[in-house]
Amino acid sequence: MRVVDAIAEFFVEAGITHYFGIPGGAVWAILDALIDHPELKGIVGKQENQAVHMADMYFRATGRVAPVIATKGPGVLNMPAALANAMNESSAVLAIGASGPTQFFGKGGFEEVYFHTDEDTISIFKPIVKQAWLVARPEEVVEVLQKAYKTAISGRPGPVFVQIPWDIQQDTTTPRRYHAQKRLITSRVRADADSVKQTVELLKNAKQPMLVAGGGVMLSQATGELATLVESFQLPVVTTLTAKGAYPEDNSLSLGPVGRSGWDCAAQATREADVILTVGNRFADNHSGNWREGVIYNSLTSKMIHVNVDAGEIGRNYPAELGIVADAKVFFQDVIAELKAQNVSRLADADWLAKLAGFKAQWAERVRQELPAGGSPVHPGRIVQEVMSAMPKRGMLFVDVGDIMQYAEAYAHINEPGTWFINSGMATMGWASCGALGVKVAYPDRTMIVLVGDGAFNMVPFTLATAVMYDLPAVWVILNNYEFNIERKASEALFKRAHPWQTFRKIKTGEPYNPDFVALAKAYGAQGERITDTSEVAAAVQRGIACTQPYVVEVLTDPKATSFFTKGMTRAYPSSWREPYPFVPEIKS
Image (cartoon, rainbow, N blue to C red):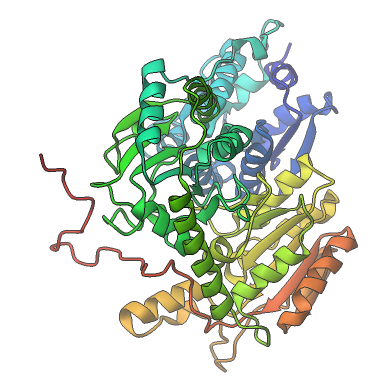
């Protein structure tokens, strides 16, 4: 059989149901083989980065892998930014690229990357994926795909890249079953019993314990166990930005997200906690206030129990009383079992919970005072609140990159796990506008709402064409302030002026300029409307949901609104090479 037919059969054996990509000459053979498998649903994007974003979000929402197929040269070279994005977010993507025939390697042929080594595309991908392969022989293709698939989903998930030359694709291989599902790791990484017992002892003896749930809790599908631990033993919880909503934020035991633009009450809680159990968290810069002592964490007074499936993350940025390599789901199960075995009824006492309730009340009052009641142009924080009021219970919110991230973290209340998607690692602009369609493919009956700035949406308006082609209705709420708002405000704060690039203006007249987003949507075959007042936002979003077609809600947004920071927080980037940065201090004996 042809190698490409073996590839298609491997997809079926592996349980793959969808794939994404862009056609091109070097993958014609792969696409030809897929024609014979209509049970595999293919979604063609308008650009390779878009296809990767769709596959990335498909995995984050479903836990299933969808391959991305791209041709050689500029096809695969459009993928790295999106794959680096997936790597930062621990999302499994199986990227399959092509090359010219092996006989042409090193001849500088059409679309060959040959400037240092013969067909050297793979060198571009190695630093940004878990592993990359250039297949050398026809009989190795499916075996390599199996390794790649297993690597992508095992341990801490991540993207992989497999490059298959044109001639190898069309060669023959012996028909065989690969038993794809029987070659995977089915167990989860479990902590040793002593580590679980030590964890329980630290929590039992704490006066002000806190739980920090990270993105690994979502990847492990451990939100049920998280809820059991929190509620059964009265253990208050905060989340990282990526895990926002892992536990309902309106519950009294939740203090919301903690970080640069998180809830004030969450930062107050982590600063005062004497024992912190953090699971699936890598202590990123925005989450930790750039690792400054006493801003989010007091590492010299708080005893930290750091649990992560990736050993490399433990102790990277903070010292840990206990550093435990474990999967979040089984770790929670084991801790719950040990607490029950020791007849522990609660971990946080009434005084600590009352103090936290006071913090949360103060935070609610800050929100009430700071957000304007209405008017035009619309405050971005109010847009978030109005969108959430229109969102159905199981609707999914996708927050694109820019100032909207800071408003959404602060002002959205997420009470249903798995309905919040954000991109805080590589922060590739436009990812949400594209990625939401990957989730819509998997969950056609769920509502998808994208919060995106005009700068980010201008990078990927073609995603509307894909939505219309495949009848994938979603609502894009575009915050139009005629600028890269976060860039302009930060530059003015640092340098007291802004570069012309940071605002969208016609060169001759200086008047603000953006395309007519509603007209643009209609040109693609979608629908839309323009909103100028706060009172119109929720109703417009509801009309977009009811429309059952791709829909744009353009909102004229106040560019003067202050970016949201947790109280007392700043970006605090080091600006001088000579001056030391106040990282976590050394522990002195």
